[in-house]
Length: 357
Image 1 (tube, rainbow, N blue to C red):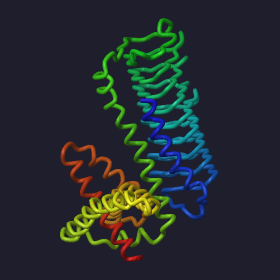
Image 2: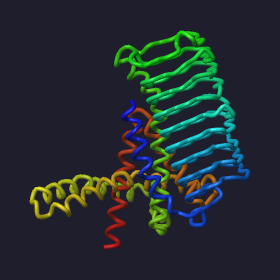
Image 3: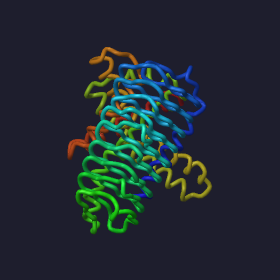
């Protein structure tokens, strides 16, 4: 669990570092604010996405608030709070659920969480009471002086409780957890996960957190891509979505999917073309990741322009990636659709590269 969280956060933070040179004047709409050092204030009646290095939020958002950066301090108010970064301090008034992924996470006593809390990190300190359930995956979790009014699902190496800790419902933890203060705390009941099978069942409940982190990383990647290639969004909007065109482009993507790695590996064996083959494989890996994101944007743009009557490419990014993430969760059908989306996006990338040759 610890290693998986660290890998996810490492990938995410590497992506985040690439956007810290973008100024707020270069990327700024009613939906998104980006920059290096940001003090986010004001009142908003819809989704807000804030990206940067050092972020302080004091805004009131009547909708979901997504903040991603290196250092985050949240002191405003929102309906749903979603935060991802290195160091995160929460003093926010979150009306409903809160999702946090980071290295060092502190939920201060002034924070007000309306419903459930989902947290993944290295060091997690909770100082505010949780009205319903809390789910945490971390190395160290500190729950001293906290009241959890329902269940606490905690997968951690170390859990710290004290006489002022109250868990009204059930405390679920691993059998190899270093748990201190258990005999002092007031707990409704406990469940120890003693087998790998039980841990696997619990880990399925943590998929929501993994999906959230990958979602934020995907959104940030698309924002960086559009910043580096400002004309790309217009080219994607012009793509025809007829059945014949989709099949043709997806088939092209299938050929690229098979041929490129084979050619690169053959070049790798020759030795003399080693640098070229390594560069090709790196670009191939990047293209595989971007392919689904490009398709997501096309879907999102279709939804935003046709249903919401909006032209914001940033809203199209947020909605399109969310749609693909949700489709991916559908058994059997989901993976098939996502595979088609990958092949279609890969074919689009080939066409874009071919047109610029």
